[in-house]
Length: 82
Image (cartoon, rainbow, N blue to C red; front, top):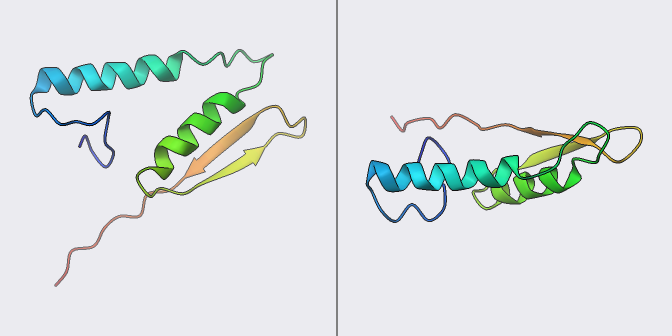
């Protein structure tokens, strides 16, 4: 785990392996063409799915034209028992 989220399988515990997983995720994220004249829905769908894998719900807010969206996700802070 890195923070609250898991990158890749994160089966290995070495910093080098974790860095490789982070780079893989970032490479995927920046591979989406989100040029302002194009739709960003493929990226939004990917991130929604990624978050859902870890139980994080997100709200998609569509633009009036319907080809773009913002994604709002909130992580609740966990309370310790006691």
